[in-house]
Length: 340
Image (cartoon, rainbow, N blue to C red; front, side):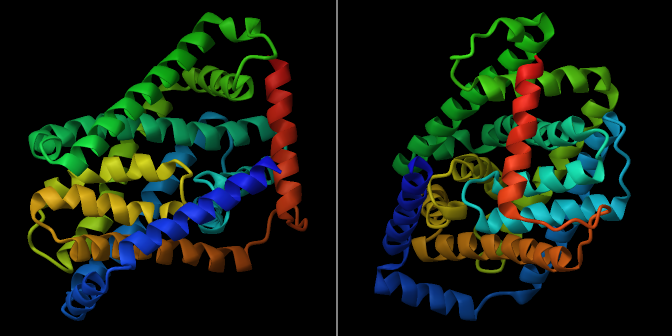
């Protein structure tokens, strides 16, 4: 019942945000005029960059799998990554596709299921750490500009608080793992299951710290490529924005849309772009176009994962059922929690 209510709330928020973004006929007219003048070469460049983005993301995950002695082929690893992206489009929340990726990876690594699950989990943790460092680096160049505009100032401060909280949680989990305190957490501890998972992941990946560091370093060009897809979308409609401008606002967009406020960040993303690009002199119509186009470039790549899924055959040749996936992942997470 609780999950149903949260889903209904997400859908309601999405509809409300979309109405706010597109209800103005003048803005819609300006968007249509700008779209007719779009530079399609920049759109093509964005699609190409996104393709390389999937290759780099696959490389990072393959390294994390190798730490746990899971040696899938490049093609199989890329297939599972693309399938996970595809399901992220349709499963509510930012990690819905991870459940599918975890399940299929556990099938491929039947003798090491816990490691397969934790590799996906660690992929998220390392990505968040890299995003925090990258955010600080690029916000340095545009902090004054964003901090002195009313709308962007609020979002900037929200990002800083969220990143500080995320960094504190991640560092705290590493400390809990290193000191062995996870064994003493009572069963009623809030988010105990997630704490145990992070602790287990930290413990396992500390043993292969050299490869783990490589996976962390690869995250920087990975995020750079992801942000570049939106830069290409921006250049298709305006020359007002430089790459540093886009790289400065994208961390705010990436972090806030990762929170399951709306479906796949739809509506919320557009609202954020309107507020964040206003200090750069970009109109609401063009900012909305940049957001929608950047999202569509990434969506096109994710839809390609649907084609991969159609032709995917697991090594066990077993049928795939979404409900069974969730049950199996929950079961293994329970095993990891109670093994600590």
